[in-house]
Amino acid sequence: MTDNFEIKKKILGKIKQYDRIIITRHFRPDGDAIGSTKGLAKILKLSFPQKEVYVLNEDSSQYLAFLGGEDAPIDDEKYADALVIVCDTATTDRISNKKYALGKELIKIDHHIDVKPYGDLSWVEEERSSLCEMIADFWLTFKDELKIDEEAATCIFTGMVTDSGRFKFSSVDGDTMRRAAALLDVGINTEWIYSNLNLDDFNVFKFEAYVYKKMKISKNGVAYIYVDKSTQKKFKLSNEQASNVVSYLDGIKGAIVWLAFIQNAGGSIRVRLRSRFVTINALAEKYGGGGHDKASGATVHSKKEMKQMLSDADELVKNYKENNTGWL
Image (cartoon, rainbow, N blue to C red):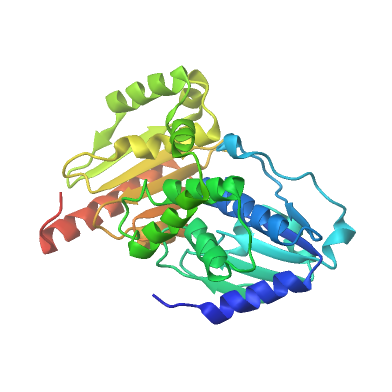
C-alpha cells in the first residue's frame, strides 16, 4: 500500500492554517461516514482547542445515535474563510452539506473508487477497509501533534467495525488490525460498542423473520429481497433499519451475491449489493451507483429495471462459477 505521507502532511498543514473547519459526509450516512466525521472533529478539537470545528450536514440519522449528535447550522458567511473536509464521499453529488462549495478550500478524504476527483487536496486510498481506518492512520502518523481520547477513538473504531463487516472483509489487512489495536489501547469499551451495534427493537426481529420467509435465490446463486414502503410501514422501520436487510441475506451457501431492493418514498428503489469472491461494483455502476469491490449501492426506477439488474447479477455469478473454483 502507498504510504501517502506527503498528502497527509499537506492536509495537516491546511488544518493548521485555518481557524474554522467544517467537516461533512455523504447523505444517508453509514457507520463509516458517521464515525469518521465525528472522530476527526473530536481529534481536531482536542489538538487545536482555539479552532472552530463543526460537523455540518443537511440530513440527519438516528443510526449510531449512541455516538452523539452533529452541530447546528451556522451562517453562510462563516463558510467563506473556512476549510471544508468531506469524508467518505466519492462524488460531490452525494455530499450531504450542499454549502460545502461556499468554503475557501476543499479537502476530500475517501476510500471509494475515485471516479470523479474533486477538492483542492485529495487523499484517496481505495484499498482501505474504511475511511475510519484512514483517520486512525492520520492520527497515528502525527501522534506527536494530534490528540485523541476515548470518545474520538470510540467513533473511529465503530466506523471501522461497521465498514469492514466486523473485520471479516477481504480489505482488512495487518495495518487495519494494528490501527484498531491502537484505538483499543486508548481505552474504549468494546462491550458497550458491540451492544449498541447488535441490539435492536423487537419489531426489527419480526421483520427479520419476515425476510427469511420472503427472500429468494436466483438460478445461479443470487439471494435477494424486495421491501416495499407498505412493509416498511408495517414493521415501523427507519430508513437505516430497512437498509440493513441486506445483512440478513449473508451466509447462504452457494449464494455468493446478495441484493436488497428497498423502495423509497418517491417510488425509486434503492439497491444494496454485497458479495463473496465476486466483484460487483461494476454492476452497481451500470445502474448509476458504485462503491467497493464487494459492497456497493445503486438505484433503479422500476420493477422492470430491478428484474434486469437481477438478471445481470445472475449472469455475473454464472460466469464467475464457471471460471473459478474455491467459492462457497
